[in-house]
Image (tube, rainbow, N blue to C red; front, side):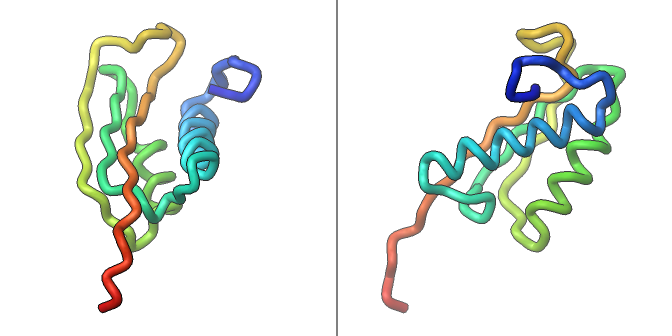
Amino acid sequence: MLADGSVPSDRETEAEAMWANVEMALAGAGFSLNTIVKVTMYVVVGTSAAPPSQIRERLLGSHKPASTLLYVSGLARPDLHYEVEVIAALLPETGV
């Protein structure tokens, strides 16, 4: 979803906006993409999971948090095709 609440007409842009929203929410809470420890991605049945998965790979690079991909019959907004939930954590400094 874009900042104005609209949903892009193409899946690639929708997925880019989804991950940009995640990055912005994390930054607002003092976290980053590298602090993600768990990703759950929801994809509407009949929609390719490739766009958000490829963007995730590009953004996270070698960082590989635990992941779950679920195909669902629909989301809260019927015009959306993707949703992602992330859990982020800051590890305490161990001095090691």
